[in-house]
Image (cartoon, rainbow, N blue to C red; front, side, top):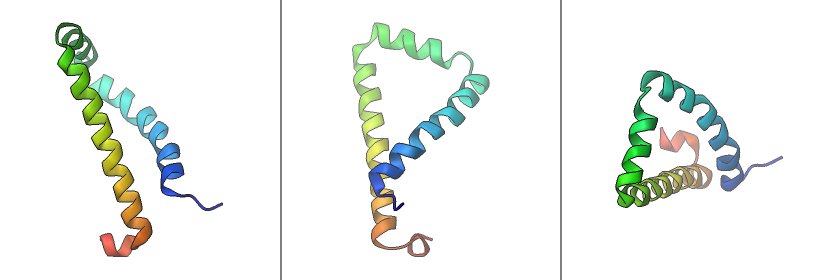
Length: 76
């Protein structure tokens, strides 16, 4: 089965969340509470979080598309 860029991102994203979220919560235990309290007081924080997520998605998608159209060796 050949993977396109969207399917590759779809399969890799949940795995990245499952690996990185527990590590983040262990290494920075108060980050979840601080982020939630900041979102409650400042509504701009939720918008900035959404923009950050959209930019990260776009960067990953562009990386996969460039790799597809050139080659992995070209990126190295």
